[in-house]
Structures are given as C-alpha cells and as structure tokens.
Image (cartoon, rainbow, N blue to C red):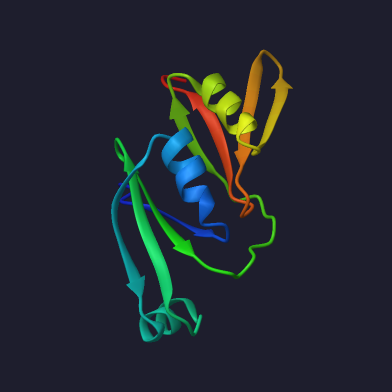
Length: 126
C-alpha cells in the first residue's frame, strides 16, 4: 500500500502560507477548483471548492478550502521531522496551539491548525 496524498479541510486559508508552507516547509504543486457537480457526487457537498496541493518530500496534502467547520475528532496526521521541536517552536510563535505531553520516557508533540486539523510530530527515524 502507498499513500498518494492526504486530504484535509481548511477553514482559514492563511494557514496554507503560515503553517503548511512557512513552518512545515511545503511547496505548492498546483491549485484547482473542484466543480460543484463532482463535489456533490463524491462528497455530497453542493458547491465549488478551491483546492491546493502542497508537497514536501513524499508527503502530499490536498487542502480543500471550505467554510464548513469540522468537529473535533481523533483524526490526526503524523509527520516526521529532523527538527520537530524547532517546528513546534515556530508554530507556537505563529499563534498555533502546540500540545506537549510526557508519556513514559517519550515526549508527545502535536500542533493544531486553526481548522482543528491535528498533526502529531515525530523524530525522523523513530
């Protein structure tokens, strides 16, 4: 199995530049509009929606920019960085929620964007 992309809903388009590009270091691959008919037939959402594809390494995010607020769930994306504490520090300085919890000998690190998407940060190699 492979993971060609991860699709997320974004309610705050400024997150694309501030978090995904500036802090996560992703680059825009392309942007497009998912037309209303396709959106309705796949997602049962009757509206055109702007989509941006962002990539860093092998990770590709498909970000749907929408005004529909997602409820909090247990869904989250795990990303590995060589400098995860620096990534968290940059996110915190930019106003994002950073959650740091001790679990035995390990430190769990999470970042929450303004659309309630949660990212667990691991060290590369762990």
